[in-house]
Image (cartoon, rainbow, N blue to C red; front, side, top):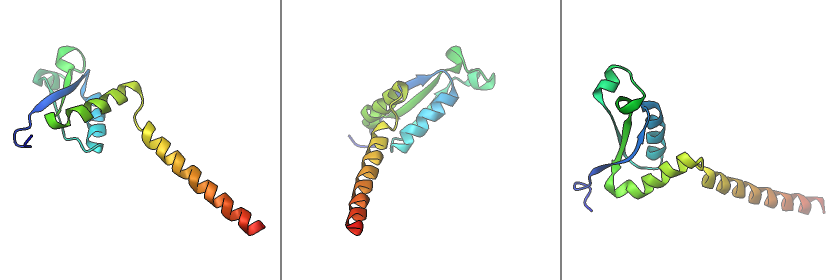
Length: 107
């Protein structure tokens, strides 16, 4: 799909702008463009509950699947677990190779 034809669609609705900002930050750090929208009256009256406090998060239709995965990972508490495992594994292999170097020096 041509990016000019790409539409903005709702990927999530949050009970306020703070949670929406967090989710947008996660999405954008994954390379997904976002936009947020909250009812104007909610902004004027600083309401963060009910229909006036609901904040919608929009992503481009072409990014929806990836964005939905990030949102699901956020709500399930699995954000960053894959990256942490990769980091842990690379550290383990570095430690193993340094242990081998130590053994060869001692012998």
